[in-house]
Length: 137
Image 1 (cartoon, rainbow, N blue to C red):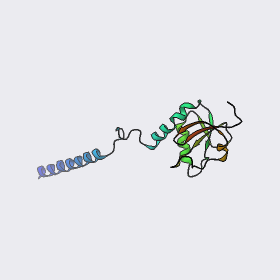
Image 2: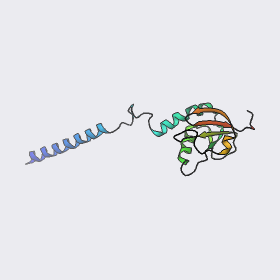
Image 3: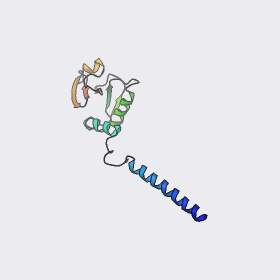
């Protein structure tokens, strides 16, 4: 009887191991080439990379549109992607970064103040850096 019990235990363990192995094979890889750089954070960092490289370090920049409950996550993702520049949730800075993340760039609700500013650089993908008209740098 003990041989039968031993065989049953070995069979059960083998089936569990096989099941786990098949599940492991089907699971998406965290480090595989198909998954690398396709998550939302990586795509966001890539979108903001040209802006981050253009801005002087530790520059304070206003952010438009001003974050509300629907857009605050996008503000924090922009803030993270632009470190060491500093994004301010206010108006009145000499530089303002306009983040048009709508499906049709150019239709996001940005402040009227940002439209009265001159464009310093259009980075594409809905990212426009503007400077106050009275700032002649």
